Image (cartoon, rainbow, N blue to C red; front, side, top):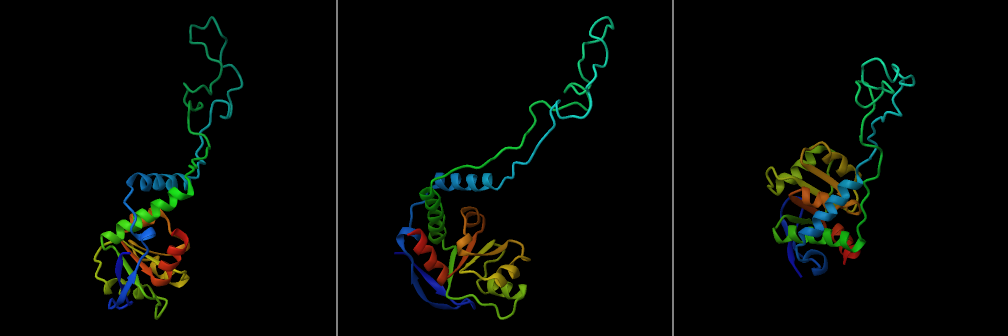
Length: 207
């Protein structure tokens, strides 16, 4: 089992914690992680884009001139795609971008990404995160205690609405409950701060 340092909010060491191999010591699988990220981003697309075909554009019910005898090209409608103000040929129409992926693969992607972060010392396990005041400055003080510099940070807790709101105004920082953890955020943020309680919940669900 991998052992990582257990920290306090001040950045001081509070001991060590053992992480389960089945969650935090999984082989890196780039293909599964990529597929999971593509799926997540595709499923977030609304698919409400739409263009008007010649049958949807207003007007054009009358033939502009007779078929023969004028010397001009034959035209049946002024809303032809060849005309200005006409319809669009093969334009985008509303559709669903939802991609399916087996649950085991989705969980494998999360475990693989977490294991990669642990192996690269990018995971900080904090015994407890409680803000003295509901202010953004308190979150900044927490991050400064660990001297992460300009790295992007993801804070994972058992669920703290005040912390999530305070971290919202800091660029490159995000706080979220462990139940909302997803593959994109794990990969997108460089450093991960996880409370000890959130680690236990992750191990219960993913082990």
